[in-house]
Amino acid sequence: MIEPPAGTAEVDPYVAALLAERTVALARRGRESTARVAMTPFLVCQSGDDRYGLPLEAVAQVVPARSYTPVPGAPAELLGLIALSGRVVSVLSLSGALRRPVSARPGDMPASAGHILVLRGGIMPLALAVDRVLAISDVDGAFASAPLHLGGLGADAVSGYAPAPGQDAARHGGEAGFVVIDLPRLLRRYLPQS
Image (cartoon, rainbow, N blue to C red; front, side):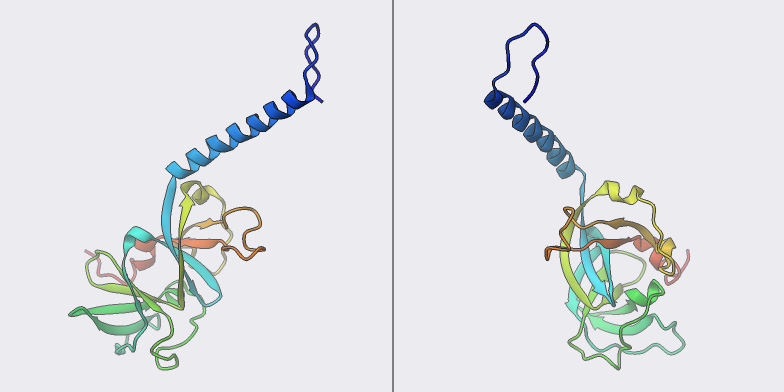
């Protein structure tokens, strides 16, 4: 029970409980409205055992994986070329570009396995190959300030980690967090320099 200030009437326990509940509800409402203002959408995908988020505004199209035409002398992470909507598109393995283990080489995987994320804009048509597209997740922009310890993940291309929504979401079957990719940094070594 809340003790009343000296020299005042005693506070009814029912009124005290209502006031405490109202205080908690008002505090929660302020946090929720602030979070809605600062949300950024990410396309969450899986590549190998890792989950990555790409800014949704950078992805023009998601298509099922298909066979690639190999490029002789290309780096291993360049899986090959595909024809898409009358254009020739270069396809990079997202895992390979991040220097992570690549799940399979193009000849080893069935044509129906995985997805290709066609990127928006850029100097040349470019896409990233992933194992699966999982979801679109709205994330508070404050996650980027968290310190990262991502040894061996091509950390220059990582801009942050987005935690799972809620404290125990992953444990209860909800989404797990994901590594946020900085696309310009990831792609700079594969694009012609001007």
